[in-house]
Structure formats: C-alpha cells, structure tokens
Amino acid sequence: MKEQTQMILRLAVGAYLVYLAYQIISGQLSGGTGMNDLLAYGAGGVLGLCGLAFCGYALWRYRKERAARSEALTKEEP
Image (cartoon, rainbow, N blue to C red):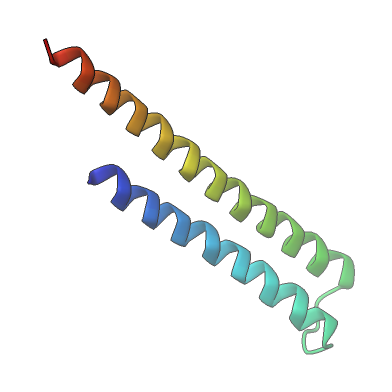
C-alpha cells in the first residue's frame, strides 16, 4: 500500500511539472508574457522533460518495489 501511495504522489508531481511547462509555452505562444522566446521555450521544454522523466522514474520505482515485495513473499512461503 505504501508503494502505491508513493507512486501516486510522484506521478502527481511529475504531471504538475508537465502542466507548468505547458502553461509557460502556451503563455509564450499567446504573447501574454514578457519573457524572451528562447528562455520560455527552453525552460518549458526542460521542465516538461523533467516532469516526464519523474513520471517514468515513479513507475520504474513502483515496479521494482512491487517485484521485490513479491519475491520476498514467495521466499517466505515453504
């Protein structure tokens, strides 16, 4: 249960980073910000990639912990 809670929270953080990246880039495209184009697109791209990477890490870590727990349970059984 602990692994599922951690995964959900990590996925929420990663999704929020992707959302922030989208907001930066869409705001720049609409012309509503005073940021330099290169800075806005670069920051949005990096933030989006970090968010996606964090989501991937969350899923990888969840699968790894779940497999370890499953393996430990099978070793305990006679």
